[in-house]
Image 1 (cartoon, rainbow, N blue to C red):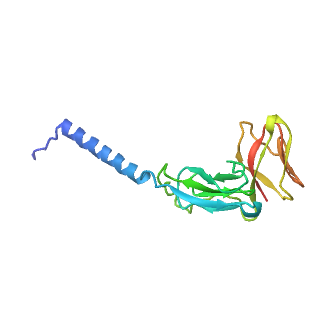
Image 2: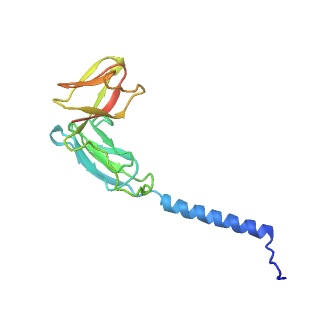
Image 3: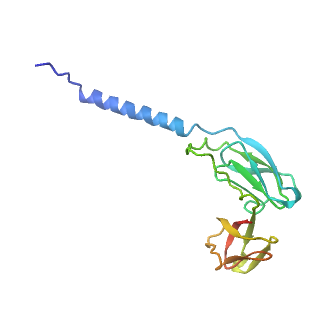
Length: 182
């Protein structure tokens, strides 16, 4: 009968723990390569039009310096993709933005990155019901609109507390949102 080699339990436990720790460290390095360097980009709304600017970076976005006389207000005249891959400006906002420095690259999903911004021919408009009262936001002639991002605790429901008419978007009873208009 062949002699069996016995591995002490303590040695086996140490080997298992070592493999788990090294595996976790490798996974962490793959999914989170650490912060990327910050990058400054300039994005300008010319003629009051919506403009989408790719940043070439990922991470948090903050307004660094306003360049226009028109105020640049987050969620109103400027905003950014959740991953920081793009910034949009509208209604005359011109500014430099600091992008990145907060997180590493996002995990690859297998498909091309999805960037925010309206579909071709669309633009973004923020409209807010102040004090739970009716507000009409003139945006000119539009065919349709949808809520891109709810900006209030009140859920915005079409034909209930927001809607469209020939001249723009109306909101009521606490609805505040960023709308994509076509």
